[in-house]
Structure formats: structure tokens, C-alpha cells
Image (cartoon, rainbow, N blue to C red):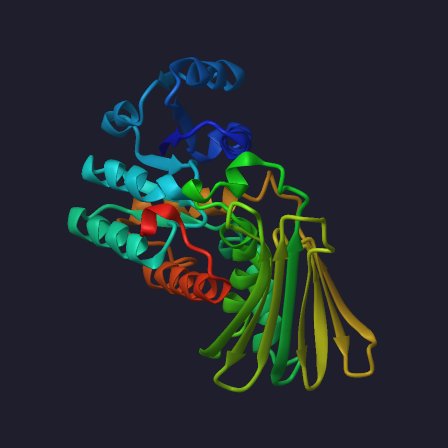
Length: 325
């Protein structure tokens, strides 16, 4: 599977380093594309990649590329994805998939029309630790789940991209997607009510958010995200028979399971990954080999569902982007 990366930023570097370790698995990085040819050439030189493009259109037309990874700001995902799909390219789009649900539906409908593979690169959906957590829940070790919490925070509010409303900046799409994803993966009861509050940057984007989800079975999910400080990145799931604690909701490192007397009864540590990105790349490769058009770990309907929740949360926070008006 030959991959081209559209957009040259931090994630592009992590992906390049990951794919260097995956050559024996049939995953090859073939090209970088940037609006600046010199930047694409610099990335190619750093990672010994064959092709550099100074436009996204050139990469989309390259017949040797099997999959395009879109690593641009959220505001550009829709147009970048449509460009690739219109050129019959399979696409893996960095999270958040788009800026809103309307855009997500448009991109997915185009992929359906063109019969190409399309996936959202929200890496926690593809990780083995997701399955480990679900196995514990399915065995009933915790009993009936009543409460879930997850937090994620980084001191990143000084990054220009993240506070620019024209680029769909803010804490929610960049950071909040991880606590929300954790809740959606591990509490399957439908959401019946969403409440959100937070504070905003002078530019109008959200800096820190507190989100509460009420589920149909009356369980609660309490989620927090912030760009103003580092947080413990912890998650917990509590049931009538016990609870579990997950270290690092963004990239789970360890699961600890306790009984209702708070005795530790099980510990699971993460296997040593390349970077964590390898799992989504492997699933894309497998999907393409089998002719699938969406991944099992993150189907299209779930991508739309996440964007619909984001839209509702932003409405509660009174946060919008200028291109939505």
C-alpha cells in the first residue's frame, strides 16, 4: 500500500517515522504534498521519500498512490478529502473528520458515490487497548456501569492554529475528541441529553470545556478537555461491582481493575507500539485488500454521530466558525 501525506506538519512527521518501521508489512510512504514545494522537498529529504509535490492536486492525481492521509487543519479536511475522492483516491482523514456534521455527510456521500475507501484517523478507535477495555466490560467484572469520566488537557493555547476560528480551532475538536471518543466506545447506551459549559479565547474559540452526557440507561459520562494546562489524562469506568482506571485516555498505557472494596484485581499494560498510528494504517491496508469501503473500528455512521455531538456541544458553548455563517 503506497501512501501519500497531504499536509506537512507534526503529525506528518510522526506518520513518516511510523511507516519507516512498517516497510516489511507492505506499507510504504511514497509522497509528501504541501502548498510549499520546498517544505515538501524538505520532508522528503528527512525521511528518504521519493516524491515531493507543491500542490495537493498533484498528489491527488498520482496514480501510484493507494491511500492519501490528510494531515491539514480541521477547516481544510472537507475540501482536501473531496479533492482526493474526486480523483478516485482512498482517504484517511486526521481527526476531527471535518468541522461539522454537514461537511462530514457531504464527504461520506461523495465517497459512497465514487466507491472509494474513506476513514477517520482517530487512533484510539483502532488500538488493541480498546478491545481490552471492552472485554472487561463484557465479562461483567464491573457489573452494571453507572459512571464514566475522562479528561485530557495540554498547555497548547499559544499555538496559532488552535486559537484561529478560521481554521476551526479550539479545544473541542483537537483535544475533546478523545474523552468523547472514550465515552462513545465504552458506554454503548444511547445519549439522551448533552450539557456543556466552558470558557473561550478572545478569538471566540473554546479553551476549556466541561461536558456531561446523560445516557438512556441513566448512567453519566463526565468529560473535560482543555488547552490551558496539562491534566492527568485519566479515565475511569465505575459499576456496581467495581471500577477500572485507564492511564492516558489519548493513548491508553495501563488498565487497572478494582473490586467494590477497592482491591486491585487486574492490571493490563500496553504492548510496546511503534507510535500507535500503526493500527489504523494496518486496518486501512486490510480494508483495501478486501475491497471494504469503511473500517469496522470507525464506520461512517459513527463519524457522523461524533460530528453531530460536536455540533450540539458547540451550540451549548456558543462557538461557531466564520465559514459556517
